[in-house]
Length: 629
Image (cartoon, rainbow, N blue to C red):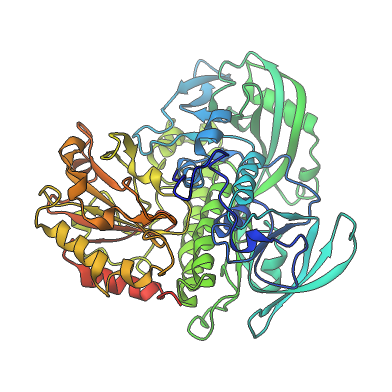
């Protein structure tokens, strides 16, 4: 975290100075503004949170509820989401209150007494150490709270407008082409209707999205014809793994996915209620909580549980659907017009809850869209950037649906129908990287370059998220995770991995640095505003192959020591050496001749280039950025 560069700070440094809209944010929703986000779920909230870092973009987020979400229905936080929370500054605090998954227990019918269940395995949750971030469980409402805090502390001083619902919308022409009909559902204006006009609208309004219906997008998919009861409960029980995540298969009574919750006592159970025949379709959703509890006890035999308190419960049928488009541009018309309305999260993909993917994929939808809207509205990028949202995220959603269909089918399958008794746990271990959120790989586009030079940095796959590793900061000798320093501030990252020579000598790195700081073609020179900090648009860092005592920081090129703030202070925090025993060049397979790794504002690797390929770097950013006005 950087502060004091504008003067001595004695208050909470997480509270950024107000700017732009935040200097005099209107209490009432204006008649015309930039972005309206509908829905304060994960997708809508992270979109708004990212936009709050663009103080000259006026964003409002509305919800028909009269107040904050008190209890969310999603609670599984995959490692990729925790990595994202790190960028928003609250991963550590959230992890302190969350339940951490380290193992998953699998229970099956006892071969000696098939009417009883017995534990068969307890594999590690992250068996290959794919992430340094944990797999967590916590109430979705707390995640929304943290994002709301981030928005309130941002330069835009954003906050949700509760008690406002969307009635309809039309898309026309002009500076504010999206006209939106709103109605107040709470407060002194309850029942009143009004129309506002915006430049862009984001629908994060759930599986029954009004925004999706208004733009004519269609859910494509099917029902799995299988019902599950889900309950958050407090119990007394003799089941020994009550505080472990468990997949429980009984001989004939069905299956359970058991998920401990934060706080040491609460847990969630997904209880198999069986196939939904035509005869049962009308009644299964009316299954009482007592029946769900009885079914759970039958599956747990010879163990039992006495439910003392039910915090929440529901019955649902598994469905697998993905929307045909994630914006309002009809298929085939992409070359004729650009999008004005977007949908994200459950509004465009629905599936079972048992893989813990709904909220996690929704968060990445919003993270992907938020910085793109910010760049376009801030004048940094052309409007064509917005077409990449649907192109990128629809593929991810379809992959999710395909994965979830297989996982939920296995979870519902009777134990005696498995040819291989360990098939369920084998699938869980084998596919861990997908639900953890690390399989997303964006295809080539205006913001993702070709993999021509991938061999220079095999560990940073172009199109996949930047996989961190530890380095040592030269100025203060502190070991840090390189990727954890990337904040959700809308900036591009340029990591220069030096060739073997020391700082100050003529080398590929020194020539690259000279070009980056002086050439009219350099993206830093071309796209940084004259009145902005040197690193306002690009966060440029260098990693030397030497250990930190061997790096002369005074000899490091100035582009890696930018001046910031009104006092033109040098920022020494962008220069790193390798960590003894954990050389990032070895861990991420970076060529000793050096390399440039470009990372998008949403933490995905956009390009890998040789230090000498300055023209390629210039061309890449010329396609997705605009010079400041």
